[in-house]
Image (cartoon, rainbow over all chains, first blue to last red; front, side, top):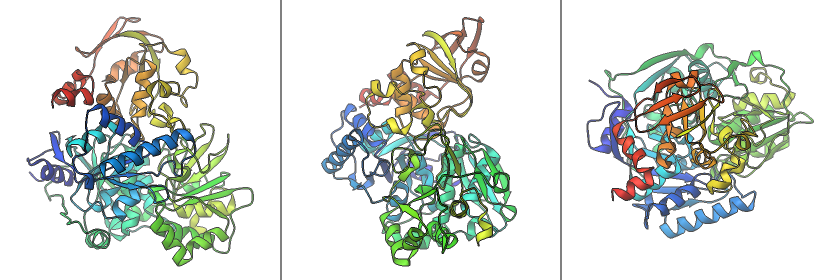
Length: 417
Length: 160
C-alpha cells in the first residue's frame, strides 16, 4: 500500500514504517517560537528542569507579533526571550526582521522533506516547500527544544485538486478561501492536506505559501505540496541545507479527494466573524470600508505589494479611509524600496508599519474602532482578532484590498487590471 | 467533579477564549480574568469554580496560544465537554492538564445551568438535572498516560 507525503516524512523521521493513525516519536529538523508563545515555552522549559536545549542550531525565536513592543508587559516578555536566546545560543530574529513564517523559509532554515514544529498555528505555511510543518503549543515547543523530538499522530490526508487556470484578477488567496468556504472551519480537522492541480503548478512559490498558510483555517495539520522544479530552484536560492523531497505514492490512500475548478473562480471574500463564511465578491460589493491592511504571513510578500501598487498607481486611498501595509520581512521591504513599489504605495496614501505581524493580531499598529469595517489580506477574521470585538473584518486578496481602498467600499479588482 | 454547565456554540476560537491584547503576561491568574472575554464579557464573574464549558464543534480553533486552556483552567473550569475540539487546543489542553471530553450527544443535550457530574477515569458524564448519562470518547493509551500524569511537564519529569 502506498504512502502519502505525511506518512513518508513521519516515517523517515521516526525510523519506522508509519501509517495514518500510528503515534510516532520523531526527530525534528527545525522549530520556532514567536513573542506571543515563547514566554510560556521558556516557563515550561524551566519547569521541566531543563538546562540546555538539545541543538541550538535547530531553533529560532522571532519577535514579530507585537514588535516593537507596545507596552511594558510585552517588553518584559521580549526581554525574557532575548535573554533565553542569548543563554542558549539559538537564533533570534528581533524587532523589524519580519514575520516568523516568512523568515523561516526565506532565511533557509527549512527544505523539502523536513519535519518542523512551531509555536504558532500558521507554521503549516512551509508545506508549500514540501515540509511537514505544524503548529503546536508552548509546552510542546519546550519538550521539542529539550529533546529534539516530539510525538505525532500520523494524520490521514485529504487530497485537493485545483483544475484549470486562475482567471485574471484572482490569486492563490481566492483559491484557499474557496476551499475553506466549501469544507468549513473544521472540514480537515486532524487531517493533512495535499494540494495539487494546474492552478497550483502555475503559481509562484511565494503565492503557494498563501495556500499552505491557511490550511489551519479548515483545521488541517499540514498543507503539503509537491517539490516541483520551482520549489527546488527557490530552495537552492535560499538555503544551504540538503533537501530530501517526498512525493506521494500513486497508490497512496486518501481519506477524501476534493476537486475545485479554478477557471470559474471569482475573487472571494470571507465575511465576519469566521474564515469559512466565504462568498464571491459580487455578493458584498459596495460594503463600506474604513481600514485596509495588506501584509501578514498570508499575503505580505513582494508580489502581493506589487499587484496592490499596480492597482493603486496614480490613484489615491479614498478620503476618510486608511490603508496600512506591513512587509512580511525586512528583505521584502528592501526589495519593495529597490523596485519602487514602496514609494508608489506611499504616494497613493498607504501607511507603512514595521515588518512583522502588524495589526493582524490586535496588539498594536491599527486597532479598528467600534462598528468599523476592515478589509485585510490576513488569515483570520475572528471577532476581536484585530483588538476590538465590535469591529468587522473581511478577508480578501491583496488585489481586492487595493481596489476596495480606492473606492472606500468593497470593490472588484478585475475593474482595475 | 461536579458543577454547572455553561453552553457555547460551534467554532469557539482562541481569540474569543483569550484575546491577544491580554497576552502581555503568562501569569495564569491574570489570564483567567479575561477568559471568554470576547464571547461573553461577564462570563468570568458569572461562573463558579468547578463549572463546565459545554460547546459545539471545533472548540478552540485558531491560534496555538497555550494561554487559552491556561486561562480556562485558572478560571476554575473543571472540564470542557464538546462535540469536537480543534487539534492544537486538544493537544495543549492535554499538555497542561485541563480535562477535555469529546462527547457529541452530551454536548448537544446538556442545557445551560444543568448540574453536571464527570468521572474522568471512567469517561462518564452525568447530567444530574435530567438524569441522563453519557460516555466520552476514550483517549489513545499514550495520551492517557500524559493526562494521568497531570500534563506533559509532569509526565516528562517522571519518565526521565
